[in-house]
Each structure stands twice: as C-alpha cells, then as structure tokens.
Length: 342
Image 1: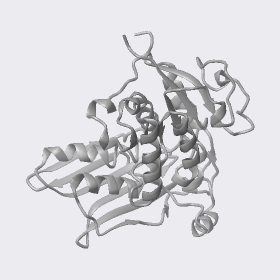
Image 2: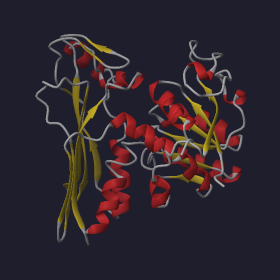
Image 3: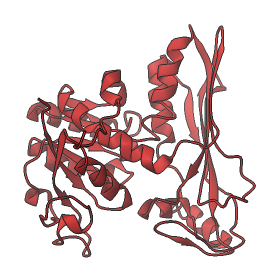
Image 4: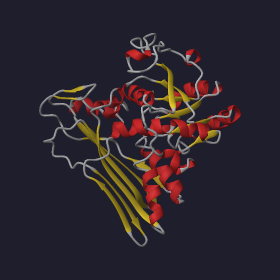
C-alpha cells in the first residue's frame, strides 16, 4: 500500500500555487496546508487558490502550520532570506524541499549556512534539499548523468532559451518590463541581477567531475530585445518600448581556460522575435562528444514545479542532514505524478 506523505507549501506565488496544484492530484501525497504572509492570502481558505485543496485557512507563520512530513518552500532565491523559515520548519521535525536557487549547491557562497542547516537537520532526523529545473537539473545534474557515457570530460556548455511568461514575482530580478534606461539604472543599483544559480550549477558540476576550478565568473545580465508592441505573460504586461528579454552568461575556469560555459536568454517572447529557440547541451569528452538538442526548449516553469513536486517523497527517504540532488538515488528523481484516479 502506498504511504501518504503529508505536505505543506510555504509561499503561494505563481510557482508555489502550481506546486500545490500538482500535489493535490498525487495519490501518494496529501496537501495539508500553506503559509503566505501576503495580506491577500493569509486567512483565506487554501481551496480558493488551489482547486481540490482542503478548506483550511492559509496561515502567516510556521507555528500555525499543521504537522507535516515535508514543507515545500517557494519564497525566495536567496539562502539568507529563507534560512529562518527553514530553521523553524526543521525544528518542528519537518523535511524541507526548496526551490531557492542558492540552496541548490551553496557550499561556495554559504558554507556556514550549510553547516548550520546540516547540523540542525541531523539533530532533528530530517533532511533539507534545494532543487529545481535550473539550477537542479538542466545545467548540472543532467550533464553529470550524461558524463557517465564518456571516460573523461574536457568541456561542458549549456545554452537555453527560457520562456518566463508563466512566472510572477521573480520577473523583477530580470528587469523585464523596464525601459532600457531604467533597466541600466536598476542593474547598476544591484536590483536587476538576472539569474540566481549559475554559480551553484557550476559548483555542483565541477564537484561531480572532480574539477578544482580556478574561479567561477558570472557576467552582468545583458539587455536583450525591446518589445515593439505590448505583450502579456500570465502575471505581467510588457509594455511597448520596454525590455522583453535578457541574456545572462557564466563560466567556470580551470587552468585559466573555460571548461564550463552556461548561457540563458530569459524573456517573454513573441513568435516573430529574432531569437534562436531551444536548448542545447554539449559535453566534449576525451573519446566522444555528447550533444543533446531540444528544439522547443525545456518548459522552465513546469519543469521547476515538477522537480520540486517529485522530490517530496525523496526528501523523506533521504538520510538526515543537508542534501543536494546528487545525494539522491536516480530513481528518487523520477516522476511521481500519477493521479489519484489511476
């Protein structure tokens, strides 16, 4: 008989709601509640946001959440911002899955936070996992798995075009919808920074390949296309004359040469935009080159939702402590999306 995993969701933005919707349909999970501090959500029945969810009120603090096996945290890209929430959940004996990009592999940038979370999670017999589409799979775990097909990797490059039309609050860090002048000013002020997670992907990839990198370089995000006419995402409107796409690049250096090169064009695109679509991954091996091309590209939003949802049961089964995706058996990453009616 399938064990039912009790889950709560922390953060009911666009991604958090989509994760909650995916969990409602799972026969091995029970969505028990949610937390969001927004005045438009706290106190409102969860079922008003997620069809099929229980009619329990959305709460505004961890202490008000019902006991659960796992909490999925979908609130911020930064470890410093989510650490207090994760600590409070772990102290309740709750396993944590987070889509915080920095939590994917923060050993370089947040080694002390990792040590604290690892010690606390071990003390309470639970695990903490950072995951997602990118970082989490496409620019780190997938290349690592494919590297098993070659006897030695010499170089890795990943190029993506990410459709951001389904995302909500995170669009602000990309500067989409700003005039070119406002974009440049916000970037200079550090409020437009593009993708958070390149360093984590490169760090995870290098550790898996046993490369002791000289450095990880993350470029400043670049302005891309300017919308000629108004275009709409699900949660935002891009006015004519404003930024509708950006390009962001990063690399890992070994012996002074780039051995990992990552680049993503993020945007809300029109079919007529002069943009090369699709994703491409290349591993240059000692004896063969491995190439994966996805003409339409991976769907970033849905892939992030899937990675977080599929990790819910895996984090319960994982050994206590801070965990990365590489700590999980391959089967733990597989889709668990069978509907309850099956």
